[in-house]
Amino acid sequence: MRRKLGKEILRALSRFNGNIIHLTHTDLDAVCCDAIFRRKYGDVLTIFSSVQDYSSYLDLFAQVQKATNLTLCLSDLGGREGAVESVARLKRNGWRIEWRDHHVWDVRVFKDVTRTIDYLCVNRELCACELACKDLLESDPIAQEIAAIGRDRDFWVNKDRRSDVLSTAISDTASREKLASKMSRGIFTDAEIEGMYTVQMDRKNKVMNNALRQSALFDHTAVTISRGYSSDVAAMLRDRYQSRTELLLRANGVFSVRTVAPVSNQIAMLFDGGGHPHAAGGNLHFTIAEKVGLRLFAYRLKKVRELIEAASRFDQS
Image (tube, rainbow, N blue to C red; front, top):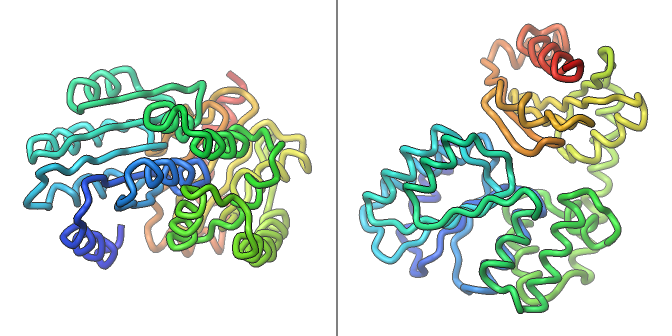
């Protein structure tokens, strides 16, 4: 997390007059979670985070001097060992903490977090926004529709065009907040959303074309460098190479992994990450020299080779 962003969040917390802080992921499932929270509570301060970075936000919240009547709600973020002490510190500072997730959790971390916070629900059969709907607005038809749209995309059902449009329209925090606000009011498509989708489709096509040009196949593992749209790029690579594992690298060392076998989360956990059995992500923690090295040496870079070799081992196991 950048220092400037941290200062902005602390300022926002100091000005916030509500009670619900929502810390969630960055994809459509997370945005749907946020829409349900907004529909339930109205005034919500939301922070969108990658799975790799959310612990830094927990540490940032610990700097808040007055946490009376504040509830931190985490969603769509898998439990990590480093988060246990962070949430314990927040509890000591007076926070109420709720956590809803559908990633794979280490058993010990699950038990530690359960003992520490006020409420924890982990259910891999549902996506995160379905859990939020079930807990908060189970009988609300708009919340049910939000949850159905989130599931369509997150579980790669892809039978509802709206899930593709909304997912593609996401580009940054401002777009996430705008879409969450619209969905919380039962607006799932309008001219503005279609316009956002059209703009991002141009970018998406460029990203996917670049990813395909930079892709390579190592045994049954397809690898590329991509700036986003992980699920779409992975699906394209699987179709192109008939691969069993897809690794999508970003220039900063963050990566996404997709696998046919239910081992994505196991691969990601070796590299400071986690997620689902078939879709996960991690971080290679590139130095400045390694960021330059990725441009020069691509998949020959040592850390990238280690990731590819790990993915190959799991594919053979």
